[in-house]
Amino acid sequence: MPLNGKLIPKNEKAPDTASNAPAVDTQGASNRQPRRHTIPTATARLPRIPGSANTARRFAADFLASSGAAGMVVEDVVLLVSEVVSNAIEHTDGAGAVQLDLRLDGAVLHVAVSDDSVQLPELQNRDGKAHRGRGLQLVEMLADEWGVRVRPDGKTVWFELTVA
Image (cartoon, rainbow, N blue to C red; front, side, top):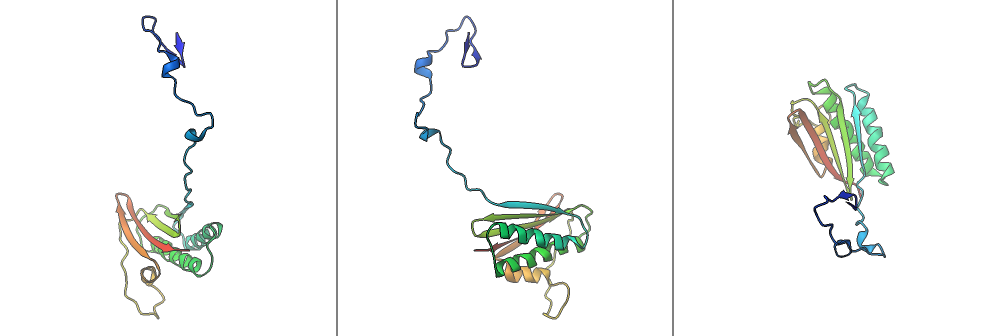
């Protein structure tokens, strides 16, 4: 005997559907799911070529513009994304793509750049006149927080910046 899509063997008594039926709220209030806050995210896989830093800059700027961020903070984010992506392309020994992940959680932008190299970045103490080697110094100066996560298949350099 079918009962709500289930087959009940002949030797078993079917449950009393009137007393076992779930309560139904005719107004629908108890069946509503709470609204979930959607956190804007974006991911780009970038080839290990010099032009990828420019692509990453545009990608980050477009993401922030679509999220409503503007002004100096966008310039800071674009600069830091460019530096970290450039480091992943220039200073690592991996052959795979570089992945850029952006996540805007309230007023905090989380940026992560992952590659397949186990070579860790080094914070250089360069003077202001140096043309190279200042990428992580800029991250240290402008980001609220930053760090490196080692993974079995490489590493992720990340930073956070308040954008509102």
